[in-house]
Each structure stands twice: as structure tokens, then as C-alpha cells.
Image (cartoon, rainbow, N blue to C red; front, side):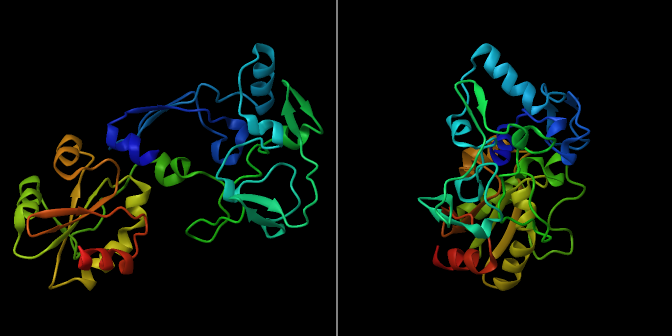
Length: 276
């Protein structure tokens, strides 16, 4: 989502975050200005709601809601790392069956449910402060090894804007202009790997070290370059089929080949470049 809204030039995001959801969101306001230098302004119309307020509203006005609420899921995440609440302990007590975490014991879960517009079971398991997402991010870790508690678009790097560009002046990754990128596409002296990026994009930030390593690995045989695409969205969309950030392409003999994998390791990108 962050990749798409960034490319589309969206300046404001309306979302359902609330202060009740946990300490990461405890100080959000109804409206948050975009950080200086870029990023999104955020409108949080439910900032002061509790989870119980939400279900009271659903019940009062018979609002259609997610069918998995009736199966014990207060919050919807990826099937591979989301469990019903309450569950049966840590993620090690589960196995993946048809892409869904399932108790290894095979015993039914004594879960809370919301069905027919009312709660079944001990609703406090869902409604206590910061309980909504207890079933999310099971077994997942952040880059620094800490337990993951937030989805990508709301972590610190996404809440704030960038404080620097990616691949600084000492990098082996070369910055190119629009004309320079077009020239490489039409056929340069050497084959080229180019990344079209946005410095505030967490996926671009995450690949910075690996892409730097790629530049070192391919030194002498490939040009490894960067082009900031969020400031030239129409240009990169029309000329390089950019639909999200980052987009990596190989430019060779007047042809462009797009890297479709999300595996952005030195080894994977090198294999792609050399086989392009």
C-alpha cells in the first residue's frame, strides 16, 4: 500500500487508527500534518474511539463487518501469522494448514466471537486496552530483532519522512538525471542496473545495503545507478513502467527488463542482472 500511494502522488491518507490500539498510537490526533520534506498527511477520524465503540456502532446500525469476526479474529492480518484471540500460546504451538495458523493439538480454540451483531464469550479478551492486534504478527521480528507489533505503513520510518537521501556521495551507486537514464535505456557503453526509488519508502530503505553490495559486485561490468522517482512520477511511469517503489530494471543493448521479484539480496539481483 505504501508503495502504491507514494507513486500515485497521494498527499493524504484516511485510516482507522485509534489511540486505544496501543502505545505506538497513543498520541495520534484527528489530523496529522505531513512531515516537512514529504510523506503523507494522515486523517484519523476514529482516533478517540475504543474497539468497543466500533462494535457498538456496528451493532447499532447493522454495519456489514468482516466475516472472520465470527471465527474469533478481532484484527485481520496475513493468514500465515495471525491467530484467533484468545489463542493457545506462542506461535510454536501452531502449524500452517492451507496457509492458516492452526493449533498443533487440533483442539478447538476457546475464542471470543462477534456474530449476529453481538459478542459470544469473554469480550474483554478483545476489548482490553491494546488487545485488538494480539493475534497479529505471530512469530515475526523487526529488522533489529525486536518483536513486530506494527504493520509497515505505520512504523517509525513510514510515520515520519526521510532525513537523508539513499546512497550518499561516497556510494558506488551512481545518481543519474532524466536524460542520463533515457540514454542508458537507449544503450550505454555498459549494461546497467537501475533502481527507481523514493527515499521515504521503507522498502527502498530496506534494500539500501544490498543494492550497495550489488554495485560493488558488478563493478567494472555493469553501471549500477539510482533515480529518484517520486519527484518524476509521470516520467518513470511512462518510460520505465514504474508502478511502485522500488522498481529495478536492467538496461542492455537498447532493451529494458524489469525485475519482478521482491527478493532484493545481492545474490538475487546479481543473478537477474547477469541473465538479463
